[in-house]
Length: 109
Image (cartoon, rainbow, N blue to C red):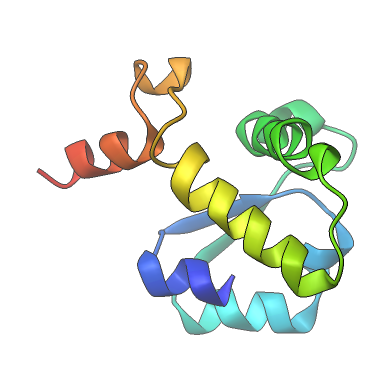
């Protein structure tokens, strides 16, 4: 989250009730950055559909294809996938068949 907040300061962070999102440290990072915290209702995965789809894509196109050893190797591969492939090469129908980077750039014009 710290790395994400260095790049952008969203108005709202919407998430599910996963344990990582319930930690005091996570809440503090968001609160200190002035980000409103929104949580999906328990058992309502479809409320968080875009995030769930991203996690599925990350697992299918990166994580399940590699055996990472040690943990910093996993971090490096996952960061590369997100920054190089997901953000800059992968087209998204929900974004009008733009990459997330192209869509973000369009918003700032």
